[in-house]
Amino acid sequence: MFFPSTALRLLAPLLAVLLLAGPLAATDLPGFRRSPWFGEQVREEWVNDGVRVLASAAKEFDPKKPTRLIIYATPNGNSIEQTLGCEKADGVDWHFDIQHVAAQVRTLRALTPTENIVLACAEADGLSWPAWKKKRTDGPARIRRVVETIRGWLSVGEVRITLAGHSGGGSFLFGYLDGGETVPADVERFVFLDANYSYRDEDRHGDKLLAWLKAGTGRRLVVIAYDDREVMLDGKRVVGPDGGTYRATVRMRVRFEKDVALTETTADDFVHRVGLDGRLALHVHANPRGKILHTALVGEMNGLLRGLTHDWPKAAWGTFGGPRAYVKWVQPTAGIPKRPADAPGGRAVVAQLEGLKPAEREIAIADEIARGNVPDFLRTFRRLKLTAKDGKGTEHAAVLEVMPDYLAVGSDADFVRVPMTPAAAAFVADRFGCALPTRKLVDEVYRAAAVKLEPKPLTTARESVATFLAHHDLIEGQRTGKKLGELVAGVKKDVVVSNRLGEKPSRVAIYGWHQTDGQPIQPLSVVHARTYVDYSHGVRLVRRGVTVDGRERDLRHILASPDLCSLVSDEGAITAPGY
Image (cartoon, rainbow, N blue to C red):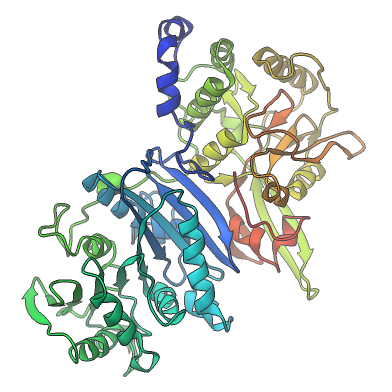
């Protein structure tokens, strides 16, 4: 929402309320930032060795309420973002529309307002938990440390933990079991979503699960699988004679029935076996039509919701088996929205910023840009072609796409470059499906720029909106005669990501403003607090999608890869990829 000047004066008493409800309102959880989706607060890091985690909590986190932490392990071949899900759109990979873990957890939040529900999605390097574990002799111990690390992100006392996973994500769950003789008391629930392939009696999985279940009446084990024995793909069975989740579930059932009586019921193609007063549940789809239901069990059939609410007397959210019960909680596709027809021009926007305090200004800028009020020329990204050798001497090639200029508000005919804090920049980047650059990428942009302008520093009122506009006008004077939309450099310092933020996480990292000889005025600096912004700061976004050696990758993965990070970083692997 953007207010005309008269409305701003009339609504001045309500600005404090806007600050609490706006897109950049302070988070309740330290280390988290605001997300553009449903006002949530999120935190993203690479933890331990080759494990990326993205955690999300509701807009408000009340430490006085009970807290449930759901740690969801991604399936083989799927990224965190694909696992969380988004709306279908042209050009969006189909993997984004099959699990919808985020939407299912949002549905649960809406149904249980008396508790905090935090979702943490965990992804293994290489997008395979089985492969990740195979490379590490201490994989199970590392998985336990991953869970402990995520638990440490929540600044509350008691936290009840749910461990869930789909497909290869089951390897994470079994790795957790293998990481100790017993299951810690704060683990409340296991949910295997067609993910129990590696269940083995010889690994004492059944012993440990039964001992844990019997030690607390609030504990739940839920297994969801389907009869995959005769499923065919391209004329061949999809599982071998001893494989698949059906056979694994049979092994589990046989083990459990040695100690526990299971009651069997059948409904809507599902065979339900329940024991220990409902605390243990095995749900198997009979699959009479011989379909591949591997992912359908999770998303189409509301499998995660079923696993999370197994002990509810009635499913208030819908039906296990479908249709999708979480549609209204599916987030939009990341990208730059179409510019609204009623969007004001850049100078009108900047005029309204004059009377605002810095925090209020950031909310207004982030909200206006995130809703799509950006000029068309910024929507056509420019390609950077990069090469680098890894530690073994193998050369890799990457193609990235960068915004041709710094973020601006308005139209092609009336735009203004707007400096912003890293919080605002990260918020917009998330909305647009982008990331902030590294120091190396800033250098590469300067080298590739078609328009290199001489820096023009200003020395007075550096943090004022009037100076923001004056500097923009100065740049436009220099740019006269140059085509709009060409790759421009030399006009601002960049807000960047850097490993140095690990030393001082409350700071902003800035770098660049190259002179005509190619040397930057500003060395990499983390001197200023994250709330600081002046006229010289610019935000140039980089698309998350990167082509490396002919394969589509996520910039997050390239940044953290020991073999590939040199393509985009001169600081080594970067494990804190955002603010």
